Image 1 (cartoon, helix red, strand yellow):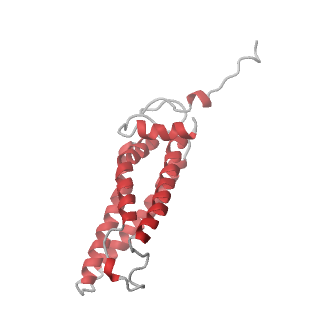
Image 2 (cartoon, rainbow, N blue to C red; image 1 turned 180 degrees about the vertical axis):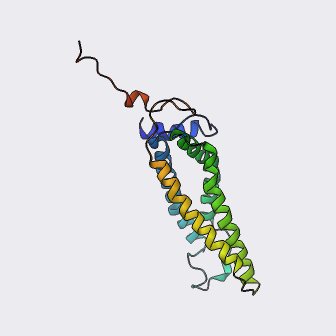
Length: 186
């Protein structure tokens, strides 16, 4: 499988949870999507600059153009939404390749949600002048969950496929893994 075939499979199987995805099929789209985000950030940083947005608006006292979303943020947010479901289904198929139920791919998102809730609660309480530590504790716990989850799922995604068929489908590397040269025996 070439890199382009792997990225094409990412889009062809965007809504497919069944089956298995080998390491290359998982990591090539991660690389390409990361490069796309980098390119969008680079291109739209020029757009941000041309529109008067700065990377550090508070320090530069440029409060006239304060906005919650710069064009670069919007572009990256749109790209993230476009690849959200295909990335989820790809992770599910990758987990199934190592014989783990694909629905476990929801776990990284749940840790992120806990972290986001803690962050919003902390910001709101501190903005209102409160100093309760409960949201800060939720933020720390959510961050810890995200960190541990990232490590665990990174390990899952770099593990080699389980040889042979499993309950999720045929071995995607069966043609490469079981190469047998019969020319020596005859």
